Length: 105
Image (cartoon, rainbow, N blue to C red; front, side):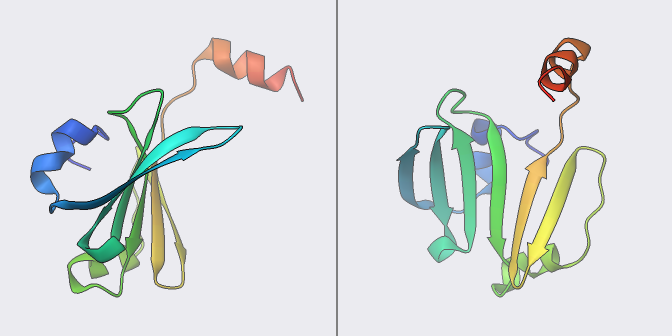
């Protein structure tokens, strides 16, 4: 993603947003932005409303068909199920956070 996974930077490259849905759950709150009849969905955390944490793409739509091909990059991962692809950024984990997480195992 050329916008560095930032919503404000990505907006000029995106089609007009059609639906904005805020989801509030016990474990995490987020906002979903839907474009092109829902063929492209962008997810941002409520805690960091400019940080994109996932994309959901319907590859049946011609403008998103390229997502159906395997994608390899150092800074994101793509997971495909049927016609849908989920793309998530990969961020390095600091030594402090890694130690904290592994101590709970």
